[in-house]
Length: 117
Image 1 (cartoon, helix red, strand yellow):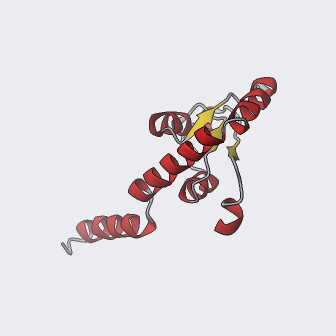
Image 2: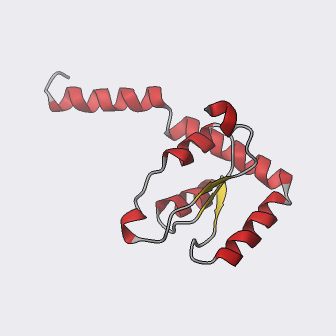
């Protein structure tokens, strides 16, 4: 699957602007970042903040299709910005979302809760 992700120039992480989705944690976001693919998110929740803070993608409101299309064209016209955003995403994914590190953290939490640490 990651081979297919790596073929993409841009990943669209599209969700409607619903309060329940503000904390949404889409797997395709993590997969895209891990593969060095920049992302365009459409939900103003934490994903918007994340891509802006880490310069690994862009935001465009889901409710404004013309603006979304314009943003996609703008992004696709600048190969260097896409390359840099993809590299930034891959770097932050390694730092924050590495499965080995996350598994070790969960293991430590479980050991603490059970009193085995």
